[in-house]
Length: 294
Image (cartoon, rainbow, N blue to C red; front, side):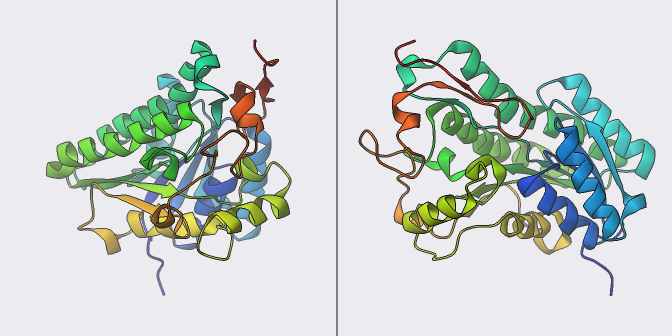
């Protein structure tokens, strides 16, 4: 039985951990060849090792990539074309928590860093992925990891939420522009997913908070997003473009209160409401927290 992605080549940014790792392994299992583009060499090496254990040694590559740097993204696309001969899917998944804390205390450099990774990174992945697909003349698919935070207020820190909203609307715009080339563009908006970016090593406590915050009484897993990405990357969704697909255990149906509607509430904890700084995600670089009032 052939896999749903047999013969296809995918580039997955942030493929070294969390959602990206789960999607890499799922795509490989479904017959795809995959390029992992990630900043963190340690977690990416772990993913490569897992792929090798599952029998995919020759069908996966890794390239260290800062998705905010155009040359890095171009190099990742070029690697896919050189080693695998084509590119059928770009999953723009790399992300960080970015700037957090009161809006009035947000530093410009932290706001810019957040948008560089979350919005500019998606723009670059779509731009260079689409160029390769147009040159092939066989269509393709662009998938973005957005967030329920980009769908309304209260779903996450301000800069993060604004950047994810930009991703959702960018996806809709390029879906229209690229349709004549048979290139589909869709975004996925995860709710609380048990990744290192969310739980920070305290998975049990994070899962409990998320179950309290959403109707579905199980915590979301990276594999849940990988399944959604598989659908959007496969021919099963050949008439689907320009959508934003929430995968959130009913969180948006109920209405999120992740940060808290008053000071100190919400499962993301009071620190996000009272202190400012920058979360560097799973890049391997430590978070920065500024002294109160700084």
